[in-house]
Length: 209
Image (cartoon, rainbow, N blue to C red; front, side, top):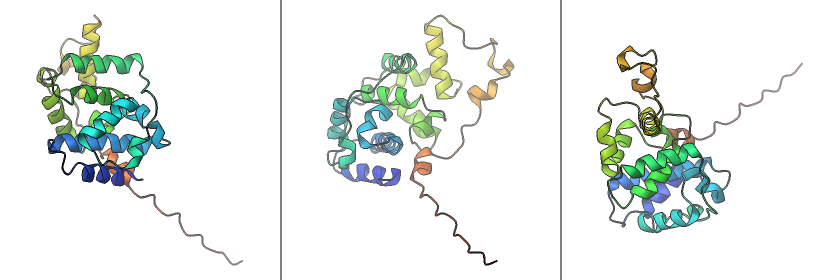
């Protein structure tokens, strides 16, 4: 199943769920990208950040007729210290919505990936990520008044909570790494990248000597 098929299957399964369309899109994007990266459907929990039981509960609430591949996940979702720190930060600033807890776990896991956070979540752009954080983690989103990149913003708050100073200079505009924190977050959506068909191998030309 391609990432595109996985996303389409989830969205079709959510047609009558009655949930907010933006939330359905966000969760479907995260799960579809995570499934596309898993070696097998059984490994989905390790890629999406939800243990098998929590994943089944989320699917039942949002995508009751989800494709069977999403229901084959097994075991817990292993978490490291860094991932736990991001999850704890999100939950500490939760807006109390029904999706805040599973989203915190999924965002924390996907934040361990190498791209911009909106890309790691399979979203189409930074605006979708900012809107989702505002809906479910409003107190946290409101603190990002300078529009810092979300990963950098998370780690800045985590370091401050632990008594560390992340930044080398007291004023952001004087910092040599300014673009790392505030630069443009353009790029290709990872869901689109994962769903792209593998190009055919070039035709072999028979050479006659």
